[in-house]
Each structure stands twice: as structure tokens, then as C-alpha cells.
Image 1 (cartoon, rainbow, N blue to C red):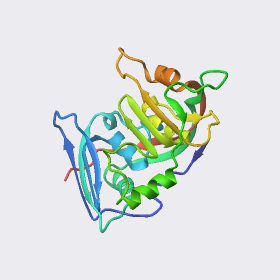
Image 2 (tube, rainbow, N blue to C red):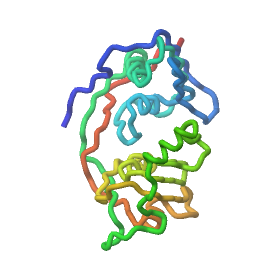
Image 3 (spheres, rainbow, N blue to C red):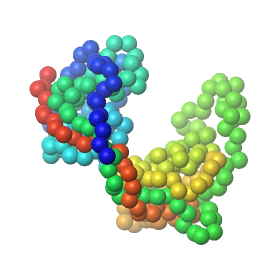
Length: 245
């Protein structure tokens, strides 16, 4: 199934924008938005597109080879504080400067289904229903002067690091959304679990420890089952290197 995929619903643009090729040997890259300023450092066009459309890598198909290797620095300034509309501005910037043409499709691709590992639907030792009353806890936090900071114990949410997931009073749907980036495929929740849960999932991304798939099964009592299903993707029809500022 195919459908038109406009690069923006409105023609929103940055006031000024500079683009330069980054030829450094630095492996660090970043995408930062602060107020009306967007700073992209040392990023491939593929990753810039991924951020601009809020996609995962596996959802971007096609495009020239240099899109995956050549790195770029972009500094763009918008009027005021556009908030989420800044990503629409980035889409338009890519259309104007990289001559990016793309469209959306829904394709039948490999996916994972999150299911129970055991017929009796038993939880693993690191997953259990949460007793946390998030509304009460958040109200108490506000009364104390605001929500907890980033270094405070996790409350009503998810924290993810390489090789580590923490859940506190989180819905399984939110866990699946965060897990997708690590699994490399779209994930569909087929557990039927409702409510909120606590979990502490750890795995080793090297060959020496449990893989993500093994850890999910042993620690949570769930598993990622390979299937095929519809996935929304962005197909890159064409792109060109920009004229640098």
C-alpha cells in the first residue's frame, strides 16, 4: 500500500540555516534543540532523516550510498520557540537543501511479536505488577516542589541505557515502544497485559553475556517471536549533496 507523504503539512522554515560537511575523525554525534535553535553535529543524512521524522533505522529505505556515510553539521535558527514544529522545519530544510524527495509506504516486513515465553503465562523474576499509584506519587512530588530530577529513583516511567531497561509503573505498550530501537525491528505487543508493571532488564551487547532476546525470556518471562507484519516506512526517492555555506 502506498500513499502520498508530503514533507510538511505547512511550509514552515528556519530564518537562517548553515550546512557544512564534517570531515573530522570524531565519532561523537548529536542532535540538540534549544528554544528556536537546532544544532546537528557530525550526523549522516540518514540519521538526520530518522530524527526529523521520528523513525527507526529499519523504517528508512533507499537513498544514495553517501547518505549513510558522509557526515554533516547543521545550525538552524527559527523565530521564537517553535517546539515540535521544529521537526517540520527540519523536513523542509532537507527538501530545500538536500533536494530530499520521499514518500511513505506500508510494507510487509519482518517484525517481532512480544508474547509469553511459557504456556502458563508466568512472569519472570524481574517483572511484576506495580503497586505504585502514579497519580498519588506525582501529586506528592509536586507538593514537594516539583517532579523528581534525572538522578532520582525512577518514578512512573522508563529509563533505558545500553544493556539496561528500568520500568516503574509503566505500561507494556511503552516498554515495547522503547524496546524497538534495541531490537532493530517493529514490535507488536501480543501479551494482552494491561495495567502497569515494574521491571529491571539487563543484557550484554557483547558475546560474553546474555543477549537481549535471552534476557527478556529469562528475566521477564516474555519472548520476542519472529513474524511478518505491516510496517510504516519512509522510502527515499532521491537526495543530493547540498551546497555548503
